[in-house]
Structures are given as structure tokens and as C-alpha cells.
Length: 251
Image 1 (tube, helix red, strand yellow):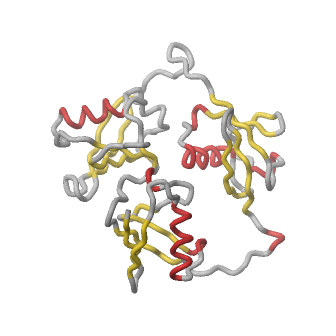
Image 2 (cartoon, one colour):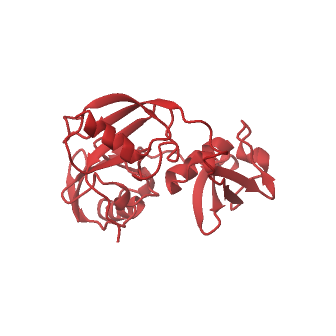
């Protein structure tokens, strides 16, 4: 599909694929505009596009979409003795992802980054390093001995509705519609965390808050699965969900 890259002074038309990642698009922009990938921020309607995701993760991007390019000012090179970024490998039972983290990240913030990139619910993760379980405390990665190229093992907690899951609780949420739907309305509502995304959609339809149509729901820049619960997606009290018209079709 063809999209428009918009800067403060110019526009650039480029072709992108549905499975092309955000960082690959940034590389194309670098070749044409000579703007380093690290200096680029891409966004649609104020929503930043993350490097680790591809176009299929963003239903708001389609043929003719305008993507805003913000250029960050170049920062001075860091002192090598205080370089804070490291690359680590996060291993699941059947796959592996490589992510960049700060040495000062806590285990909780590491889980949040894994959730954003991979979509795994935070509550299901148990992390291990060198045979030791990593607790959700305030110690940073360096204090656990985690350094460049360290391997973090992820075990997923089994879901046992009869015993392991806590009782269902009521969530107060905000549903934000797109600008083309209800003029970007903000809708507060209450729903149980055990409710599925489809339950949420039916609630909005039954109250005639949304017209009858197909919809996509987004939580923390990830497309939500209709048959999975809000709890499964890691939705917490006070979170904001975004809704767009459309359906997901993956080949």
C-alpha cells in the first residue's frame, strides 16, 4: 500500500507492505531523506508507531494514510563508561525475541516491554536468569547480574479458572473511538475483567453507543482478540481502550 510521510516542510510517498516493520519503513525514509533511524518518530493521529511492530498491528494504517515524521535532535554521544542500553535474549518455550533494555530497568518494567513487543499477558510471566526466579521488586537488571547478551527464560503460568485465577473484579475503563467514528468520542464504562472483548463490543452495541458494524479494539498498541478476556490482555482499572471500524485478516 502507498502511504504519505509528512514532515514540517515536505511530504514523501512510499510503498509499504502489511508485514513490513516500523523500523524497516524508517530505513526507507533514511535512504531518501538522510534522517537517521534513531532520530525518527513516526505517528498517526498522535499515536506513535513502535519499531518492533509491523503494519498488521496497526489497523489505522491503510492505503493513503498520512504518517507524521518527527525528527528528534541529535544527542551527544554518551560516555562509554556510562552506556546504559543492552541487548538481551528473551526465550519462550518455542521462540525467542531480542530486545533492548536499560540496565536500570526493573523486572516489572522488563515484563511490560515483553508484553508490548510479544503480547504475552504480564500476569502469566515468570522470568528466570541463570536458574534463579526474578521477583517483581525494585532491584534493577544489573543487580541480578544481567548484562549484554544475557538470556532470560520465560515460563508461562497455566490458566486454571477453577483455582488459579483470582475472583472476577469490576473495571472502570475509558473507550476512545477514532476521529472517523462518533467524532472521537470518549466513553467511560464499567465491566468485569473476566468479560471477553466480544462481551465489551456487545455491551456497546446493546446500549446503542456504537452503530452495528465490525470493530477492532486496541490495548497498549496491540490488537485485542475477541474471544479472550480483558484480564488475559492485561487490562487494568483506569486503562484506555481504542476502537476502530474493521476486521483482522491474516494470511
